[in-house]
Image (cartoon, rainbow, N blue to C red; front, side, top):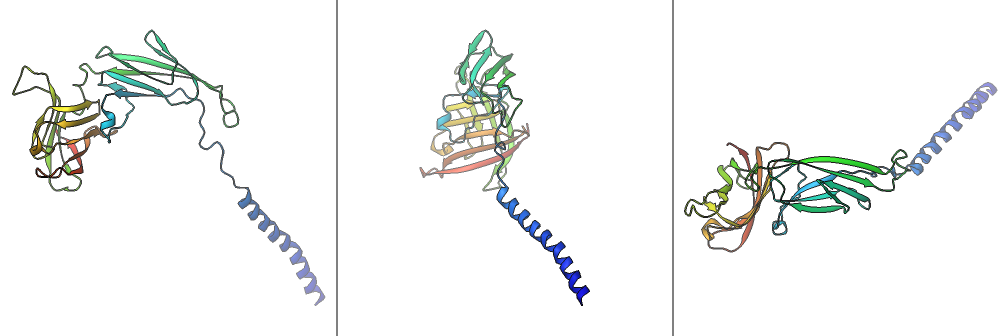
Amino acid sequence: MMKKQFQFIVWLALVVPIAIGIMFSLEGCSDDIKPDPCAKEKPVTADFFIYEAFSFTKELEDWKDLDTDTVNSDGVNFVAKEKGAIYEWTLGAETITTRSFYRENYPRGESIEVSLKVNKKPDKNCFPNDDGDDIKVRNFYTTKKSWCDSRLNGTYRGADDDAPTAIREITIEICAPNLTQPSLSESLRINNLTGGCDIFGFGIYQPGYTQLGFGSAGGGTPCLVPVGVARLDSINRNLVTIFYSRLESVNSFKRINKKFVGTRIK
C-alpha cells in the first residue's frame, strides 16, 4: 500500500508541474500575441502612376484613373505613390519638384522617358537597411494619332448582364467619318448600344487607350441618350465592359443603369 502511495506521489510530482506549465504557456500566448507593426509598412519608394488626362472625368461616375504605359490622350498626369517626400522628376530637360504634375502636347508615336527620385526619412524599425532614397525610371508611348488610336476601336459580341440571352453586336469607332457631312470633323460612333441606334456625335467623349467615356449622345430620345464608360479588361484586352445609363423608354425621362459585357470579334 505504501509503495502505491509513493508511486502516486511521484506521478503527481511529475505531471502537475507539466500541466501547470502548459496552462501558463497557453495563457501567455493569448496575452502576448500582438499585431506586427510593420505588416502594413513599406520601404521608401519612387514608384509612380501615369494617368491619361481628360476634362470630363467628374461627369462620368464609372471612369477610373488607370496606370498606363501607352497614352492616347493629349495630356498626362504623373503622381508619385510616396507621400510627404522630397521629389525630383526629370521629363526631358525639365525638373519638377511636386508630388504630382500635368503636362500635354507630347510628340506623337514616340517613347518618352520620365524618372523620379524620392528622398524621405525611412522607418528604420521596420526597414533597417532602407536609406530613404529611391529612383524609378519609366517610359510611356504616345499613340500616333491622339484620341483616335484607342484599343477600344472594334466590334464586340455580348449582352447586358440583366438580359444575358439577348446577344447583340456593338461597334465602337473613336474617330469615325461624318458620312452625312464629310466636310465636318471625325467624331465618336457607337453602333447598337441602345435601341438599335447607330449614334454618331457625342458632346462628351474621352478616349483613353483602354477606356472610353461618352455622354451627351446624338440621336435624341429614340436612341435613349446613353452615358457611360467602356473599359477593356486589364488582362484580356479582347474583353470589354460598358457601364452605362439610358432612358428607360422613349416615353420616360427616368434613367436606368446597365452593364454590357462582350468579346471582340473584329
